Image (cartoon, rainbow over all chains, first blue to last red; front, side, top):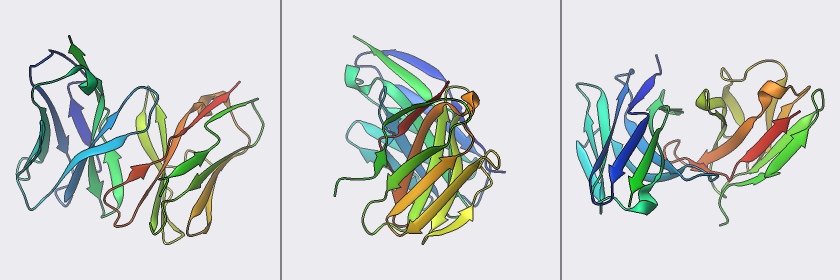
Length: 111
Length: 112
């Protein structure tokens, strides 16, 4: 199968708090896991990605962790700011080309 | 590079009409994806091209949908005849390695 499940579907956090989004995938052969951010009315844009040969990657306030054994990966946003409000999608590559997306998480950062 | 360019940005058409969506890839990219986004179904992969060849069209809803890639930098997605349930935002995305996909701005299609 080529399923990517994403939780939660909505997430509301106080400004300055952390946000965590979790995804699971079905194909153990998947080896690349990007995360996209989509602001209202705009295109999805890559914010961070991780490959299967590493367990964690960090870029300023954003980090991604990968557990290949359990087939799940997570996005962590620390010190959230209002501009972090958006829909976040996790994705996994299947068959080396098919990018399958999770259903998305709507993140709202309360000021 | 201006990125992936889609046209038109918005399209309103009547049921039964033919609709053609266009996409210009980032120069040098060799993979092209067409996605459809709706509230109900999220982001769905419709078709994937590699080096101008359709590799996987299993996501194309039905025979009313067709996609072409006449050259390395350009693709079209055609719906004929269009139906109200085709209303969605259609994105194309391109990549070099098949990994980092860059999305176009999308075409918002409304079929009335």
